[in-house]
Image (cartoon, rainbow, N blue to C red; front, side, top):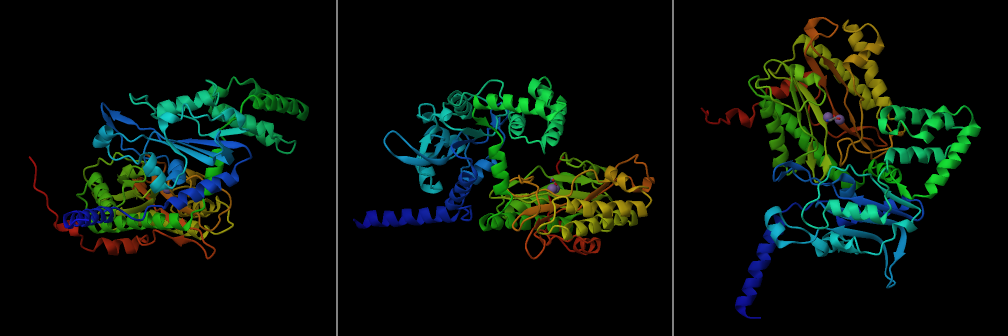
Length: 538
Ligand code: GLY
Ligand code: MN
Ligand code: MN
């Protein structure tokens, strides 16, 4: 090798190293995703094919799309962050005409230099093989002609489509992939996943649970008008004895034999898997939560009555970006005074928070995993007596809720514990007279799972180690409430992210102060933003 070629190679190697060092190195490894696909396979009934599509691209206006975000199930199983892809997982090994065996196939976006110049690099087939560790990978355009006979499976399980994705000019976009799937799988035009799931519960009904199944179906009939004319569901609800229900069950079994489509297996399997966090997931989730807690601390220091809600939001989100969090896990909620009474308030357009409490419910998303942390603080640095009275009830309710978040407890236990404290506290203050009235001022649940989704899927069974939940009681007293008007406009939520362990609950967001007195102390500290002055604009 000549001297010049060698030095060019060295320069290129250094340049490559510098580039790769400039990228995050702590993404979930390919092995993680492979392991999760194996875990899905283990939970599938025999002779089942699972078909999972990438999230749709959404148009914002004209030629601008919303920032693309992968479907969390799809990301969990693949690590692929691009649109227009479909993953097929088989419960057993398949053999193709040439004798090759495989148990999954991945169709991905084709590389395209012109498109990549505008919208960024694509992994393509080779990138997916090399970086994500798949073996059987094709361009999406090959899905249509690939000899894959979905009719030969007992179950073809998928998450039903929302029909709100567009056909783009390119071939093998999501629209085309789904169209191909529908043809290959004999998808009927009137397929209804809810009906499909209800029929499934009828097909396995027993004398012991038939009354319960009938009640569930009745609830669904009230919720979904499109099912109200379904003869089988109505007959089952109105059946007066077990014999009639058995007859209906037999009818359903015949109908089911004519189709192998299923929309119940996959959500259940994903909920069972995703609710238990692996060590790799815990690292990312902890990081997202810690980043969000630091955001709360920095805002406590920076807060003053002249700040606007959107500026407060900006400070949180700036902290997230400083730590490399790519997104917010959900639209940031920053509500001053009365705005805090709107549970998912995201307008954030009040120009001055004044002397009110500010409810701030935000979560950084770090490499896919999102936090969900709420602090409520007095904009002027000191709780008024009324604000503090309500705040302390919520604080004590949260303490009780966290204490109830232990292995083996029912998912409802933190809520029960929090609700009791809120009800008693509001009665002591004369805001309500009876326990059941507390629902008016505490109108939401206390806990949900947390992970790739802010409301992560899970089975809502008894707690197990390595699950992460929120504990988030709140009291919201809107104007014109039926109580002394000195309470009106006070809204408090305190929300932390709790890891369930054999040794009791661990508060992952505990770094951000929660006690009223501690918040007041932190608010006295200077902020680097105190001296950050911007020029006045005309
Ligand atoms: N940030 C949404 C929630 O607390 O559930
Ligand atoms: Mn939450
Ligand atoms: Mn929240």
